[in-house]
Image (cartoon, rainbow, N blue to C red):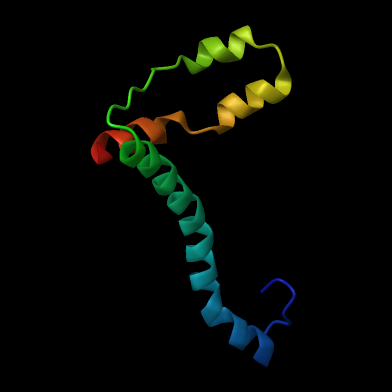
Amino acid sequence: MSRRIIGSKGQAAAKPTLPSLKRRVVDIPQDAWHGLTSWPVVTYSDVVIEDLDKTAMKRSMESRPFCRTVCDVPFGFFAPMVGYRA
């Protein structure tokens, strides 16, 4: 949409496809999380999840890339999803 001329036929044609593209962008990570959480439940009989302290991990690791990785990973998604699948 950003490269379309405002009011043109191309913009009018691209406008209806935009919501489906946005929906697909949102659904891809959700589908990946559901696939990632269903695998251990199907593969193993017992699944144990350790509760991690993110703030302590950030403080102990001085490496900036690792700290960014710990902050970006949504640890809060994994445990509840595995919990309701098990």
